[in-house]
Structures are given as C-alpha cells and as structure tokens.
Image (cartoon, rainbow, N blue to C red; front, side, top):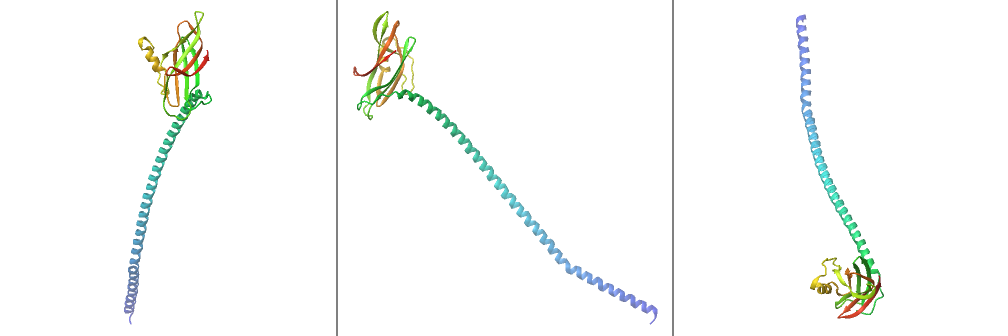
Length: 243
C-alpha cells in the first residue's frame, strides 16, 4: 500500500472518530436538556409559592395591625369614659359633703316625743341690723301618715323707749324651704297678712325646714324670741331663744 493511500485511510479514521465523539456529545447534551428545564420550572414554582406565602403573611399582618388599632381606640374611649365617671364621682362626693354640712343643722335633735307629736328639733336665730334671720327644723315623731298643717309664730320680747314690750314678728322675706326657693318680696300694704300666713305656714308629714328674715320694729331691741308652732290657733310646742 502506497504512502498516499495509507495517509488517506488514517485521515478518514480520524474523521470517523471525531464524528463519533461529536455525536456522543450531542446525544449527552440532548439527554441532559429536559432535566434542566424541569429544574428551572421547579425553581419558578418555588419562587411563586414564596411570593404567595409572603402576600398572605402581609395580609395577616395588616389585619392584625387593624385589630390592634381598633383595640387601642376602644381602650382610649374606655379610659375617657372612666375619667368622666371619676369626675362625676368627685363632683357627687363634693355635693354629698355639702349635704352633710347642711345636715349638721339637723343634728341638734331632741328626744323623740309621743306618736305623731310635733317637735322643734333645731332653732337658730341671728340678729342682722333691722331684721332677725331664723332657721327652724320641725319633725314629727312616729311613722308618716296624715300631713300636719299649722303655722309658725315668733313672739319677741325686749325694750322700746326704755319699756318692756312684746311684738309678734312678721316676715321680711319669704322662707327658703327644702326646694331652696328664696323670694324677696317686701311685706307691704293689705297683702302683708296673707303673705305672712303663706310664709309661716307649715305642711309636712315627717319634717320641714323653714328659714327667712323677720322684720324688727324701728327702735325695738329684742331680748328673747319664743318660736311657737300653732295648729288652729293652739300652741302645740314653743321654744324660747335668748338673744
């Protein structure tokens, strides 16, 4: 075999080997390609699942924050309501203290009398220039029943122009009853008797408080006043107060 033929055969053999190697490589590449696509698809699925999970977590977080804000708002409203209740309670306690101070006037109590009897439980008289202020508490012993109707009367004894005289004092201002209504009409003219009757009238079941001002005649210096409770013109109870 000539050298030329031998060289040609060697070249063909080498070419055949190269073709076989290239085919093997191509076959391996083709065999491996479907696995790479599957891995990429799986990676994309994982990322999508993570994105969905993150979105759900964000939604739950926003919902929790909204509930927290609502709870904080309700708590603030409850605190405001509690503060208002505390203020009302403090105001009520102050008012209760005032009522207790007023009730101190009632503490000058006398022993209870027979069933249904009327008692002057407390009497307070104070001189005020040309008038005499009074506060009187009347109580009826026993259980409440028929209303008592009567009159208050103030009989003053003292000096006028160096002589001992006695006056039945008339109201200068109408009484302030438990309704806390205080009028300031002067007792003048023909209405004086009617107004005096209305001012000094008593009507109660168990207790009544009466207060007001009594007019003092000019030049009259009172030394004592007898506070009387009348029923049908009859004196039921009387108490003398020295001034």
